[in-house]
Length: 209
Image 1 (cartoon, helix red, strand yellow):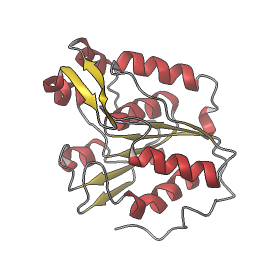
Image 2: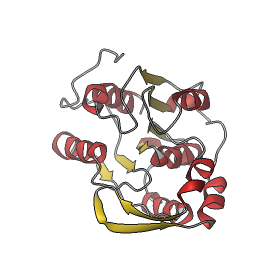
Image 3: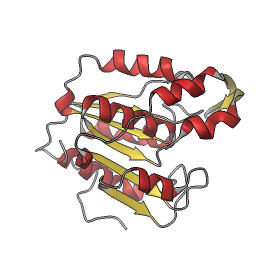
Image 4: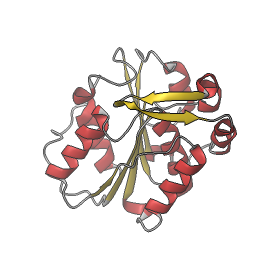
C-alpha cells in the first residue's frame, strides 16, 4: 500500500518547509500517539522547522481563533498543517484559507452531523481526570468552518483507513477526489500502524513544498 520512499529518520535537504502545525482530534491532545511521534521526529531530525501542536479548545470558534492567531505571522508558502479526525476537518479549513500544504489523517467530513450526539461533558482520552464540555452552539460553529474545493488539490494529501471504526472511508475518499490519497485496506481510526505509513506522509510533506 505504501509507496517507495525515503526513511523518515533521514532529513530531506531540498525541502524549504519552515513551519508545521499539528491539529489533534475530538477529545484528544498533543499527547496523542501520532502527535508525539511527529513531535519527536521533527525535534530530532528537523530542528530548524517550527513545530506547533496546541491543545485545542472544544469550541470550534475558539479553536479557529487560536489557530489563526498562532499562525498569523507564519509564511504561508512554506508552512504545512497536519490534522487527524476533527483536526483533519480543521486542517482542510486551513488549507482552503491559506492555500498551504496539508496532510489529513482519517479526516472528519461532517463533524456538525457526527458530533451532535456528543453534546455534553466528556473525559479527555489521554487524561481521564480532565473534562471538556461540548456545547450545542458548537454545532453551528462547525457548520461555519466547512469549506469547498481547494485552490490546488495537489497540496492536500489524505491518509484514509478502510478499517476506521468511527468514520466512513468512502465518505472520506469522496470528499477529496482530486487530492492524492493513501487508502489503507485495514488499520483503524487512530491509525495504530502509523509508523508503517510515516515515510509516505513525510515524503509528501517535503516534496510538496
